[in-house]
Length: 139
Image 1 (cartoon, rainbow, N blue to C red):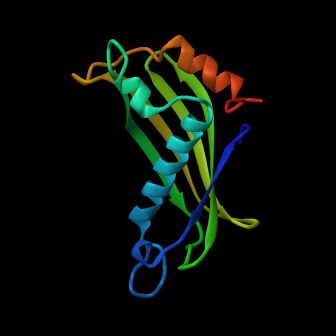
Image 2: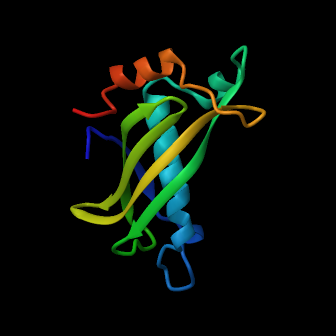
């Protein structure tokens, strides 16, 4: 995995099923939080993108996930997010969720930059530069 941004996540009762195991869909929220916080750490905020002359937003276009080991109530996890490639309107990311030294889940994500009409737009140069300056891409 390329250099990654690390975001901590605590598992709460609401994230689990009746047995205290994290429900699979909750991981999608954790991955989303990791992507959002990685962008924020690089200085790219969703609210700022929406306030541009041409408002922009990101949408997940494709996501491949693998669940390896379950997380449980009260676990403290790390969501590790790296930006692997930017091509045109698309960003390609790799994400992993760890509990200590144990890999729990991973995802490969393709996100698209688009205007509010849903039309693809190239990632702005300042966004690409911010990600590069934050070191969140390939080493």
